[in-house]
Length: 327
Image (cartoon, rainbow, N blue to C red; front, top):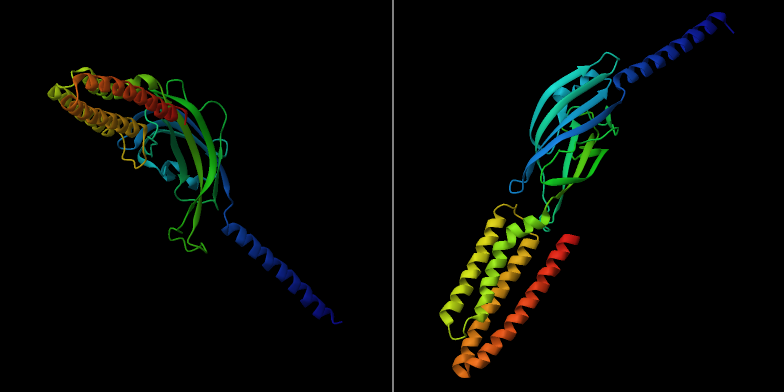
């Protein structure tokens, strides 16, 4: 074979190898490596828990460790559920070839409350952190679980019974205008914090909010011990008690968020209104007995009805309260 021809083939092979290497290195340069971001949190305060507005305020220290400077969490940090975010004391250390960032944040968070068991309710506070500019193709969170994540006096009036941190991926059904994505979907790494809290002094709070309701019921119950033919006094006390219970419910509802579910507050007030109304019906029947038969029969009817209503009312209260407390 011609030696010159062999040389041409040899040089052509070398050229193909160089071109393929160039293409490979160019593709690697275009696809930036995915970086792992270590995230840790320490909560210093949870306060201003507002049931009506469905929000609370949380203050915490946040630290992040990563390599790529363009992540810039000082500007790109996103807390999706936050109504407002205040950042303070940001510090950055890059002396060891990695970015170590520490900052303090105070956030007003929007959340949903479960009030069906109020005031024996247990709430879960949710907090999540994302980078607004880089999705899972560039950034993945890992949780720094070392040490404690909150202090002894983090929250007043409540106790923290669980504190869980985790990482996950959050899918958005949009590409946010990114033409490099084949589908109208994007996925972001997210760092999650779930804090379970339970009220202190549940019994004291229960008496505080329901005492007026129970006193109103007892006032209407006293009507059974007023002489059966004293119709004005008996009806006056019962109707007054009826409006007092309604007023008590409106006061409690004004401090709670709107909710379509039936709560313990609804059950106890509805039960009390029903039994006060039953007392009014019994009073009308007792008056009929006085006019048609005798005072003795009306008095006997009052005594039997009073005991039956009181025992049934107490048992139903115990049932509803026990169900709310144990669930």
